[in-house]
Length: 264
Image (cartoon, rainbow, N blue to C red; front, side, top):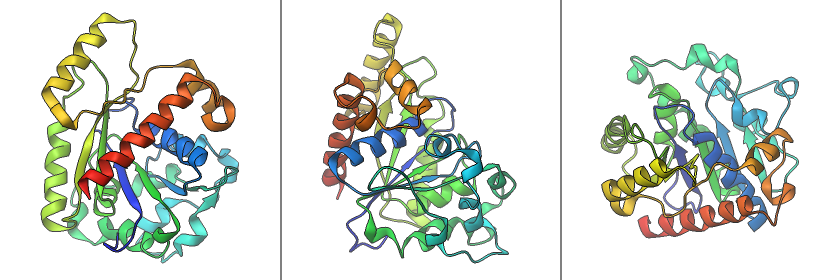
């Protein structure tokens, strides 16, 4: 993103699946909607779970894979979908992305710069752009890192929680050195947290000790309100605005804002 641009672009990334990458983006969309902020969420996972939180499968006719197809030159504006929630736009994904999301030799072309180049023309419309990545370090993940200022690594408070995070750190360093010197690690976000399980309390304490200030103060618990709202294709700010779940979403946005300002 242009250094003069006030947009905050964040990649949500972990090599492990089911740790809250998509959930982070969805919570940020809800909190931004409630705060009157403009957000573009970019679904880069061929499973398209984030897309399915907003759109029915039949509603997705064009999707993000066109930005990674060297045979096409799509206008990114034609791919962005305005959701029913004011200020929340979506660049959807689909299974069509899978064959284009290569893991090896992704740097042999300039496709890893596709997102940075495409979104440059629309970024000033948004306060936040969030990239939801698949659980891998592949073309689309590196493209997200090249287009971002910050990285959030969601993980679980479990024995294996920190496993593989060193690979993400190495990827950040590679992108910093060669493509995007402004990229910074914003922090590690514990998600899917089960408060009543003592072993998770123990691992949370260990993760905080291990990561220090890079560990988010906000912890995303495993709450039924989240699943209910996603099932209804709704945001917490509409579905259950007075709930604990919505309060946590707002706390998450506040901490993201504070961390972004500190790293600026």
